[in-house]
Image (cartoon, rainbow, N blue to C red; front, side):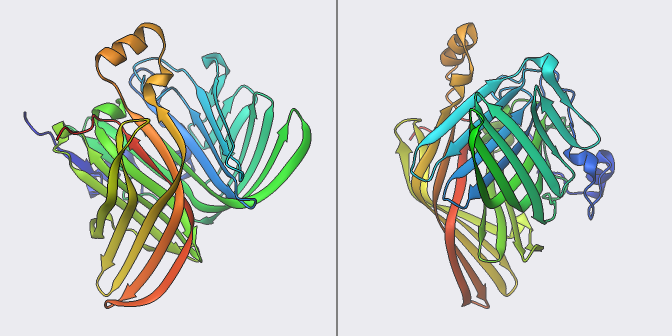
Length: 361
């Protein structure tokens, strides 16, 4: 099998082709970047750790990620994990005629549900079948992307997956009311990013780990992406570390990624690491992030998004992708010339997106 190229868009030509800057992110970059047509997908994502120990995640999608061949088919995913361990998970289907999104800035509407912002301040409103949520997010760490934010695939770089962490870390104010009664107010640390592409991710990537978090006065984003076999299973480490709102480390080529205690998770059949480590070395400076899994908060099988003949065909084709979300301990270590100078810990949230088949022994 011929191995096709895959690359992170980082050259001057990539920046010119995409009409974006190395040192500035524009408002339109968080606007709608696709036409919503067949083959494309796009989503705007928010999550927050709230002051009572609960966690909230909201995603506005142009269509289900497993079925991007269809025309515009909007959805809102809502996931509230309460501090007592109970969860509220909802998938809201929105008719295409009730979807709109600006290309100039982040301004997405699905019926009365809205996701709006300007790379610094965002407001989100969701009526999740009687659970009404209002979010105000104010950025602390400025918008950032790994180089252009585009992973290109193919001989002519004809396919892409793109990503913009518009608010790597921000202050979140959240109000939740059930059936309009007794609104509860929360504060927390929030995050927003934006993804889009022009071909199914299942055809480009095998799996990825992704995390974002806060520990002490540091904010971080860490990811490890493995391309599909036809692209040589190429790996893409992503790393961003900010201190007091200023980025201090973000060169993915300086990351060494490793996993420990990997076992098959019985519900999804995917190999899951109980510990993932990102080790970033830049001269005398070294930062180590260790995520230790304590609890699974979400297991989601992609085939659950399909129905009827499409679900049957997916089973025949062995489509068995899954998404898993975890919470646990994040340990941060800072070394200078091999001397440990700082250690901090906090709770964190991370995910495993597993598109491909599990390798056979």
